[in-house]
Image 1: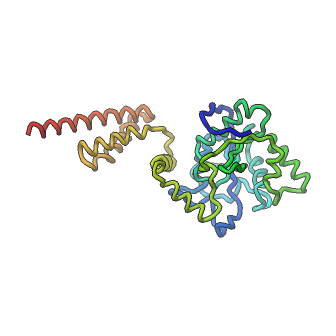
Image 2 (image 1 turned 90 degrees about the vertical axis):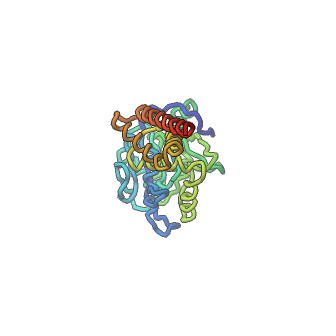
Image 3 (image 1 turned 120 degrees about the vertical axis):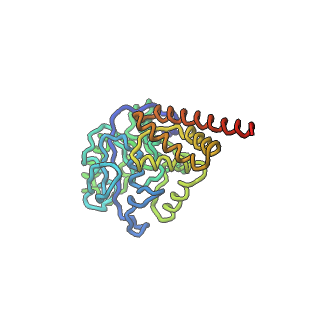
Length: 300
């Protein structure tokens, strides 16, 4: 069954996350793929930001610095493939009934896509006996490492595969997903499901993130993550304020005014309302300033 992300119902059920960050990255010459930067942030940190609502996040792979605390696990044997890695992740502290399973190389995965996956699993369709919800790319291919699953069926089928094959090393992930009842969530633009397997993929991601029409949103999201800010702000209000300050006062007034608005909002206790109120007052001041200048020119 296939659906598309839309106005997803809220997902209130606790969930954990397993992020697979191992692998040899052979097509990248053995580079530390999760640590490669896109728009100044490591791929793994971009994925961790998307699943920040998880109760426990287990990262399977070599330990490295990350933007937020995680639980580390290693597959056995190291480099044994996604199935041993997933087994290690599930055993690394996952206790929730629902678990996100994500690759560490998804530069455009967003919290909104994560919420859509979780909501689909908890919604009427997902609640009717489905074991998971996987993202599908524009060609209709399943992306099992961009998915939300019920943890119990994952553990059951992984145990059965290990018993049947005498272990999990080297087994393809499709052996697992073929045994699960899956709901599919379409990614028609291919943005959320885009992964970085080659240097060309990485170059494409770095170029896409600067595309006109999305660069500002990407920049704001990156800055907020870098500064540890979890705040939704009406960027249109701030851009209008910057424009008014630049036109009505002087060009350098734009960045300085927005900085002062942020400072005032923080001094007032922070939050969206504090930012909105400080921006409103500064915009009113810029308008009065401009009117006064216009009046002075007319009188002259």
